[in-house]
Structures are given as structure tokens and as C-alpha cells.
Image 1 (cartoon, rainbow, N blue to C red):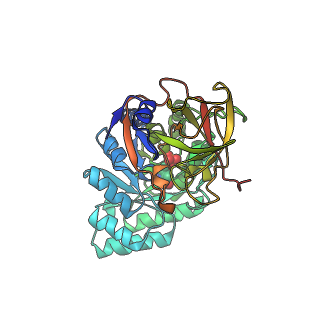
Image 2 (image 1 turned 30 degrees about the horizontal axis):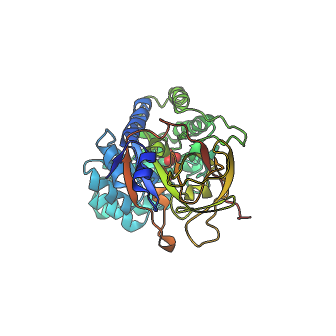
Image 3 (image 1 turned 135 degrees about the horizontal axis):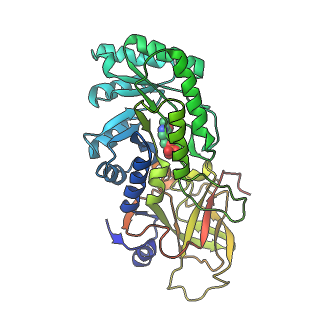
Amino acid sequence: MQRFASAREAALTLRPDQPVYCFRPHVLIKDADRFMKMFPGETAYAVKTNGEDLVLDTLARNGVSTFDVASPGEFAAVRKVAPNAQMLYMHPIKAQSDIRLALETYGIRVLAVDHEDEIAKITRIVRALDIDPASITLYVRLQTKGHAAYELSKKFGAAPAHAIELLQRSDKIGYKVGLCFHVGSQIEDPDTYENALRSADWVRNRAGVPLAGLDIGGGFPAEYGNDPKRKHVEMPSLGQLMSRLRGDIKEYGFGDLPLVAEPGRVIVARAFSLIVRVLLRKGRRLYINDGIWASLSDSWTGKITLPARFIPDPAKKLRHGDVEEIVPFRVCGATCDSVDILSRPFWLPATVETGDWIEIGHIGAYSLSLRTRFNGFYPDTFVEVGTAFDEGSEPEGFASLETMAPPQ
Ligand SMILES: *Cc1c(COP(=O)(O)O)cnc(C)c1O
């Protein structure tokens, strides 16, 4: 992989027409390390956030030894770069054949459930393979309520009374049992984890079975940009969240249990930025070489504002407007699809022109992992960059990637 001091240097050297991912291994290592130091338990990186080989490999070589996986593709990706890593199969609803593959081929012994029929599916295979249930930990996934940019509690999780039954049923078969929850992604309210812990405490106190562990899932927010045109929402910092969480864990009496967290976004977001090129400027519209079917699909669901740095093409001598004036541009993606228009503008210097580049920062989470081959566009160029996005010149603008609205 080619190495550059900054994305600006990469853009001006390579003059890329295709989107380029700028990978910062030192930032990834730092953010993973920071999380592991703050969290009083096992850190299981959530592979779905960004399952690139270079991410998994960097994490595995720098202290991450447990991975949260959900599919055969993720088992294989982890096994390939980290043959000795432990995998937690935390998807509550699994194909029968995938359960078999996990238990038989990958030696996975930790799985999540949120329904009795899932326990039955797992037990059928455990019996067929003659595995001792006591070597397996089933985590019962609890439903949670709270505020996150992405809510998942509507889809997965057992209500508290149901969770009690599932714990007792699993215990009776001979499994070790634990409780888990996942509060959603990019949580905004520091009470979120406490609410989930309170619910877990309620379930534990009534289940009357020994717990082997508590898995608090992911959801820890990453740092993004602020859209100065909108109300500023103060996000809790990771330090604040963690110190509150450590207190709550003690208060609800989970301090002596083995703990697991499944962070994704907070570990990988800052490790990548993306260089895109302006293929054409039409008035206040920019047509760029990426879009919602590639790296920018987070814009469908999130309420996230990404910082953006303007990288003007020095070959362009004649420019109009004032570089100090930051104005909104409507951004159209690379595909021929008419929905491939970002719902929120990018704010950039008024002088941006056809041929210029834009570096979009903090894009490591749910970008590369969600890109498609739609229309034949598939960004897949990587360079390594030596300085963090936040170092060096301040980003002038921001790429506002909020909820998709119908294009106007
Ligand atoms: C997606 C997911 C995660 C990671 O969530 P982040 O918000 O990226 O930290 C963790 N656990 C489960 C079960 C998930 O589905």
C-alpha cells in the first residue's frame, strides 16, 4: 500500500479519479487501545462495522483477541487473519447450517439467543455433534429501550419476563448462560446503558440461575463533526460514558461477573477518511465519484455530520467566488440512480470546481462494509496515511449525511 503524510498529499500525488480510502493504522490502534483501557472486561470488536482484512489484522496484532461475528463470511474473515482469536456468535437469529458451521468447523462456543426455538435449533446440533452443553455459553439477548441514532430493539431481544424463561430453559439443558443487550449504534443519551443494566438486574434477580457473563453490546458513539447550521447536540464523550458505565455496573452488582463489550463504530470510525473527486459542478450541485450505494450509505439511517476538507486542484488557475465563504452544495452520487442524491448538503468553500477533491473524515464505520457493486462502481483503492484526520489544517467544511429524504 502506498504511504503518504496526509490525504492532501495523496490526492495531489495520485490525482485519483476513483474514491480512495485513507487508512490510518496508528489511529485504529490508538482508538482500540483507548477503549480496552477504559472498559473493565473483554473487548470483542464488532466485525460488521468494518470487516476489511487490514482492519481485522491490525486489531488482532494490537491486542484485540475477541471478535463479535454474525455470519460465515465473518467467521472466515476473522479466522484468516487471526487464527487464534475467540469468536462470539452474537446474532440472535441464525441459519441452522451456520450454527453447525460455527460449532463444528470454527469451534465457536459462545452464541446469542432471544427465543426458545433458537435454543432448540442450537441444541439439535449440539446433540448431533455430541458436544457437552456445559462447554457452550448462551447469551440471552434482552430487549432495550433508549435513544440511539440507530435503534435495534424493535428487531431483536426478548422482553424481560421472556428472558427469564430463556435463561432457565438454557440452564436446564446444561448450557452456561449469560445476558446480553445491544442498545443500538451511536447512542446519544448516557442513561441508555443504565436502563439496560437495570433491566438485566431485574431479570437476573428473578431467574435464579448462575450467570456466566454480561455482554453490554456496542453503541458507543464515535466523534463526528458538527453542522453549524443546526442545533448543536452535546454528545457524551467516551470517557464520560465509561465512567458512568463503570459506576452503574458496580451499582447493579455486575462488577464480579465476566464482562464483554462489542464496540464497532467507536473503534474504527476515525481510522479512515475518503478522498472523493468532483466529477462535475453544476451551479450549487456537485456530482462526485462516490454515493449512497458505495461509501456514503450511512446517510440512509444516521444523523451524522462528517467533517470535510477541501483539496483544490492546483492545476485549476481560474476560480470564482471567495474561498473563505462556506456554502451548501447538493451532492449527487456516482450511479445513474435518481435516489443517489444525499439528503443533506456538503458545506464547502464557494470556489469548489470540477476536478477538485474532498476528503471526508471519520468514515471508517459502516461505509466500506456497506458498499455495493451497483452500476459497476465499487471503490476499492486504499492508501496509508501517517497523520490523523484531525491533525494539520482544520477541515473547512462538513459532509452532512442525514436521513434520506426524497430528492427535491
Ligand atoms: C452492530 C453491532 C455492534 C456494534 O455496534 P457499534 O454501534 O458500531 O458499536 C455490536 N453488537 C451487536 C450485536 C451489533 O449488532
